[in-house]
Length: 192
Image (cartoon, rainbow, N blue to C red; front, side):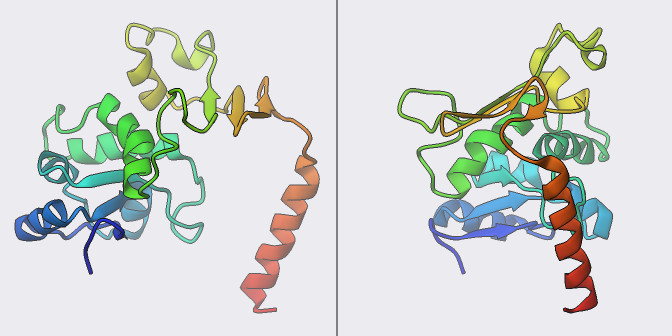
């Protein structure tokens, strides 16, 4: 099951022949390092996939294996899990951030997202760099964004609409959404 309209999640056990097949056929991969670590399922060979020009994006998987659902955290984990092999240059913060943006768009076959450019969807998130979590890390703001684990988004604009401003949801009743989510989760767990 391969082709430019196909992508697979995880791919922690791909061998070199399978990586080559994915590359030749344009098959994409959604790397979910947080889920892979939580489930102890393995470490995806992302450097080999990138070297072979496999379309590679990042994902968070589902709440059963990744409660945070934080894509920026996945970028951090993608870098750190590759460093377990002893090579601190196995995957850079910039490459991980590209996997989360342009890479994810490519995996999904989307040409309207993944970058801040004319003609693209007006989707952007922003973080204040003058926060304590970034102190001492501003020599490389991209690496700081990936490694410093910022606590929350300061500004989020989706399709040109401001959804988060100054760290707070705009025009949404957050307590009501949390209560509804908890109610649905309980019903799902009980089998209702």
